[in-house]
Image: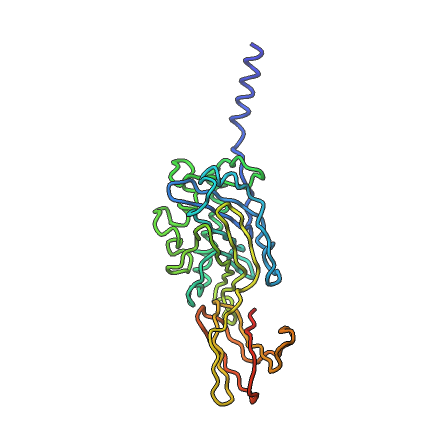
Length: 309
């Protein structure tokens, strides 16, 4: 009888314990999500996105803090064709509202969003990805070390409403790759296919920051088929596509990325360190196209490179 009573007490204690939670999400945390049709979504909280911000151009780091065994158990050891997304956001009341999100190179108007749209769509979606598994769905923690992950079936009758697929599509599972219009990307997908490289953008509402680019390329992620995720900080290096001269005006054409600032660096004495070359006073903000800077000079010959910030 004594053993039966003890066993009953243990069972009651177990039933009274709420499901363990995989993370304690806060705005500013970087979320890493893997998905593929017909599979569970796997989501990680990697901690503060600030770890990737403010780094010198070229800073390179392998992203750790997530357990790849969950990925291989769900998708197999070769991740080719699996989709990956990274996203973070400040709070909706921050004095410097910013969302960070992975994307292919966008069109020039992709990130021109109002304050209301930023709050409702970008913050609202990313914040839901972080908080909804905790409340109201109380999704149990994945068996992971460290325990900062969820494995959620999009069509699970109990937990599916907390899944990435459900949240970004508004529950209809259409246009998941573009967040069903919630993110201002038009037809540009948020999620990227493994293996490959993809951009990481900071997006701010234009109504709050009318005098500065509302978006900025923070860096580039690369992921391999065996799940090695690497981040390189800074904008992409521009490529000069053409140089022409008419009279004393040189025209330099080069590739740009939306939101970055470009200037022309020049010299008439090649061979020195390019870091010491003078910078022309003309600057422009990239629009994702091939752009042009004109330089007036009486020198018969000059050499150019394009600086970017």
